[in-house]
Length: 324
Image: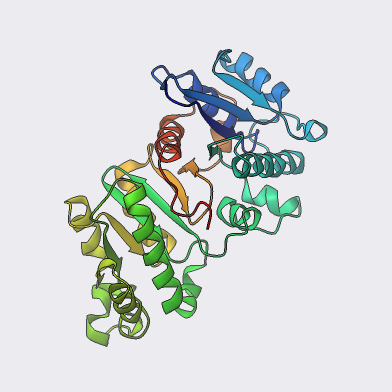
């Protein structure tokens, strides 16, 4: 008999679609029998949303962990509220602690509201940085995947005007290293990595930008010396076509929209985010809180279902960053 896997799902901002897609995901038929789900959040909110949306709370294979009853927020669909963000942050902390001590084998995070976090006084750009802080992880990256694409970002939530100025060889090399370690964990034994250029035509030999020559190429050379199967810099208008057709197992992109534009075109409703470098398994749907449809029963849970599926798969494999 297979050992039980306990998958925690944090509810995120309750005024968004997080609780709805979490409930829809755990209600889906066909999950492996050895998997149990733990909804991390306020039971009152879960039950209220389940009643309003006509969803049930399965009994045998699901439980609700409420680590901060005093922070139970009001349910105000579509509103940005400090109480919801404070609760969401507490639930994330609790899920991380449970993963670190073995009570949970993986965590899936429903979307939070970054504006709400700022209003609540949490000075983190998003989930990724908060999780890194909580696990004391210095080197980490976002990998987004959907369809036949896997994309890792060198820079994340930077204004486009700052990307070229802040792009560093060391950060590109770190993204390649994290990608190279993650791909076997994800089942890609050849671990073929393509690296994007920054400028049109990858700079055309310096004619329209020197970042490829001075910043990106040195990282690629260092990665090759370290034994990684890496190619580039490749023009961004070519590399994703190549990846979709099987030439690369993952693409390292220089900035947010360079990597996520192609991915969301292919898998807008099924994209998944995995945080690389953590000593725990964390996945999430690749979308936001969708305040505009919250509370209406219209949320598409496909991305959450994929995030849960990936969490189950990764929790059953050896995490390359566990026990460092």
